[in-house]
Length: 433
Image 1 (cartoon, rainbow, N blue to C red):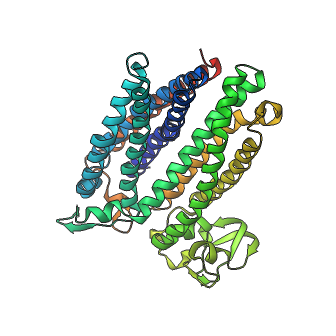
Image 2 (spheres, rainbow, N blue to C red; image 1 turned 90 degrees about the vertical axis):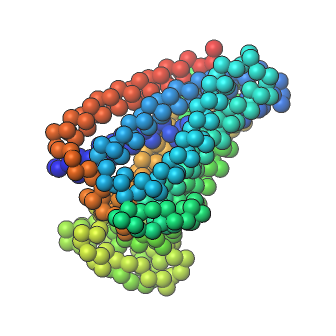
Image 3 (cartoon, helix red, strand yellow; image 1 turned 135 degrees about the horizontal axis):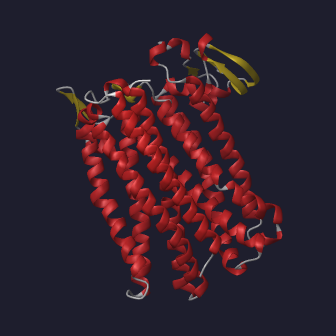
């Protein structure tokens, strides 16, 4: 245990907590905007009530996302000063655009929407929530482009020991960044869809506000199945992108040790990193890994034995996180398809209504596992192939300082999560007023 490891654990913890709230903000804003649009088109007051009810849950989630996100940025200066100095010229432009173009826009218009129900003409009021939804997703774009640059650094030159922006177009057209953005966006929409389905199912099973929650269910069901399917399809192409730009991460994701063409895909495996092999390998698909990664049975896949041990990510954590993410994704597709099939009369399927509230945590878990694959699988690099993680940590801090701040983050963020879950459950159970 040292300053580097504690700083990494602290940043990982605060990021994971922050990302509990981010995805629901991205997807629920769109669903709320659509519900209010339905009200404008039909004049049906139920859709107005739906926009207000789900909008209240959105506002709770949005507020907690802002609070937990602010502390993240402070750590760039306190714990990761060397990293900030190295990449500041790159990140400065992206985060400045995110703050001025997107965050201030969504923060302003969310207040306009919340306070403007009786003050604005209906069409302008509806426009305000659409601006919030678009700005929220634009905000995610710039943040994920910054992360995409860490995964695949492009459009820069090294000058005086710093990475300086050389080509802004290359930065914003980074193929890895775009794949990461789409994957995160589809995951966020999947989370939001299951959130609406789960709360709606909870009420429908109890026979409360049946018409209200049937309409909510009917809106969320096609939204959820569409984006769950898109998430899995796009995830395959994102995996191919990883194979192209980060072959070591791919080898860790699959616990693949020997460089070979026609590399098999094992449905069941247990890695043994200490002995550079797998304890167990069952049900091989000949050439399956080559086909999935490079779209060719004859493609060569790099093995971990050809990578120096110091350049390998943590194998077991990356491997099992990837397997868990994919497994949960397939399970979520099953439930989303089931919900879509029952969307007309969902209350007539009591088994589904019982299960869906318990499914709500699963897309969150799958999303967090995906971030473990992305960030742990990139190690030992904080900027892939350019800057090692250990070179990015601040030099002017010591163990007691980081231990104290980490402990305070655990207490504060745990309290915020507890408050967030309580408020969402409390208002979700109350239903529309």
